Length: 224
Length: 224
Image 1: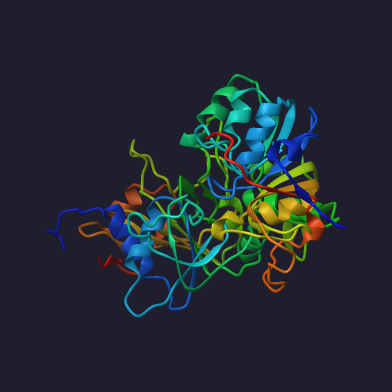
Image 2: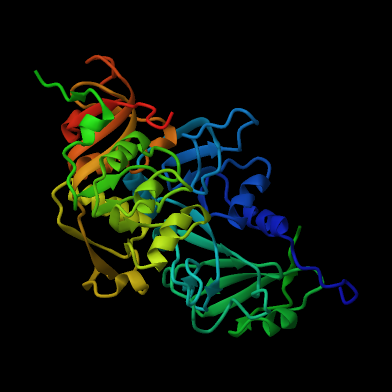
């Protein structure tokens, strides 16, 4: 391992890693951006039902060109199709599904996460405007919340921090963090480093992570 | 005879007065009552409070009303978006007020308003800026904030089919906020693709029972 160059994961590889953690039969809500890509990497043999906040359960991939229907879009306003067995419902029922803890996993983008699993992802610090959309409800309501993000900002600042400085989305909600260099669990006693990208050591990940990471042994390399 | 059919979009919105509060259905570009919005724009009604998920979509949806300074206040979940540039400029110029609401809370406030429920406690938003100034209470060990039901003078909804009793069915993901908005508008006006005879809708498949709808109007292409 010592000679492997440090190779951070690409967006598609992070999405692929996340999809490995969807159990067969899981109800999954994917946020806009990198989380949406996870739908492309469902492991063979597993059936996943995707939920979209605007009233879809059991939707499928994008339609063929020329078959787009403006009345059939997902939360990111992208054209989708319905799988056999899929269904439509209104926004209040849709959020009963999330707020009522019926959704197994939500995958959300992240700006900051702290060791208690508090999440900031809806508004840039100091911005005049931000969009909440369904983020606060979904982060609070899903049984498990996976966060997909780069490990640091484009200025190299840690996004996994001791205290959030960006506007908060929800408290104590994040269960697992997937970045370009690590997979980290939010446990009852703080952050547990589970996996690292090829060429990275636990110390490399700790160097760009503000809170203390714990790990039992040198973490596994992310299988990609 | 109970006949809620109105013969034109202009007639359907004729009694909307300056200062009215209007629930406007739709999510992104799906399920937006574009014809009713255009008719209201032409009529010149102003000082409106609109309740709508988004803040306009390029030059469509509620954007024309905002562009022509007809909207004094917007209650929405997703004001910051590339396609909401008209709203952004008006907001930064201080010409429109904003009440930002999490999407599930908005859906539930409207559902509650239409159901005679004046308020409810929810964990969504606890610890965030949307909780500021709201009553907090721990219920069953869960910290919650108080949110109020929302009602409006009018609801503009978009459906696929309607009959003269006001029964409605929708088109796929265009359902979104429309059913609960119909419940919460004192006068709910449904813009439909087609009007069908009584009995033309299967009673098992009616999504919005006619009791929630006061007017049904066939869509017209006012911009064509």
